Length: 53
Image (cartoon, rainbow, N blue to C red; front, side, top):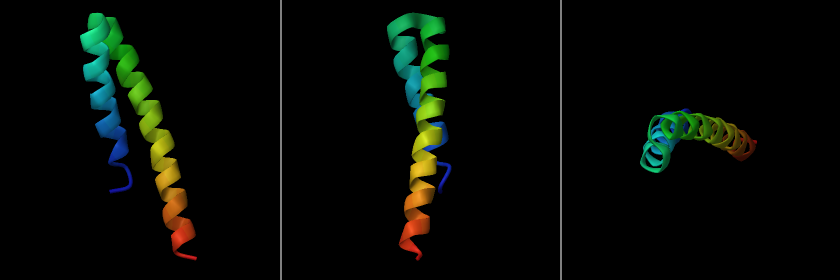
């Protein structure tokens, strides 16, 4: 459950990037989505750890 933002944002970014800039946009969108998903996963883990204290 904690890693769910990674594939979701990667696929969403890939789709949006493809709609905007074809293949190269899909690559940039997937990369941006992957980074955003990693950041949100870190934020989610941090929030869950603070809630357990």
